[in-house]
Image (cartoon, rainbow, N blue to C red; front, side):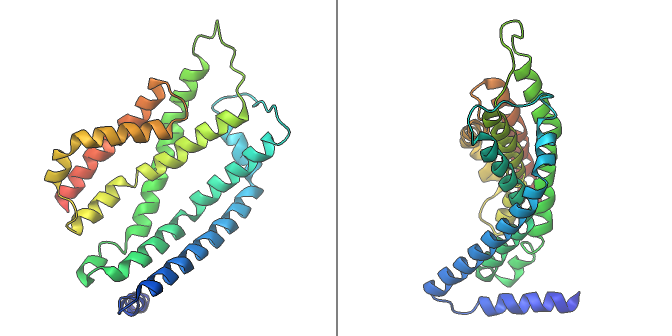
Length: 243
């Protein structure tokens, strides 16, 4: 364990030397290439299990989805495979991001960032679980049962799958907010007083984020997304205070 830690410290110290702008850009390019390769590999793996993933995604709806164009099914298939590939690759992507910013930090700041990979992964999975077990059942139940005496629910895959995958993926990312705020507080970039004072701007940003996450314009689903985002912001203020 000590040898691994020493090796990581040596790598960071080596990268922390005098680097030109071109060297920084080359390092960024290398990390982006590595990330793209890993996402490609995880997407291929996810594509093998995409039929099972699709069955899981349509289970809250409980019916088959319609397609009305020749390529719609294939497009949805690869969309789900890519989303699943990104979720699988998330720990590696967070690691590449942290290793890129570590050389620019002071030695006493690096200890607060180095454990970001497991923490970010755990928070992302909590967000995915929250979206799947709480938000999606409530949203599907409301939308499918809206004026049943007037509307017949025969949803298309082109609209349903992006709706579900967007909620899962972006809510997962939104749950990273407390960790980001905690690290920024440790680095003296924000303070609890600043976050409390800027709550009005936070409300506007949360409303915009909720509108972007939810593909539908109805206030019910937007409210379902805004409530946990408000909770995350309040929790972030607490973590900032602790930091």
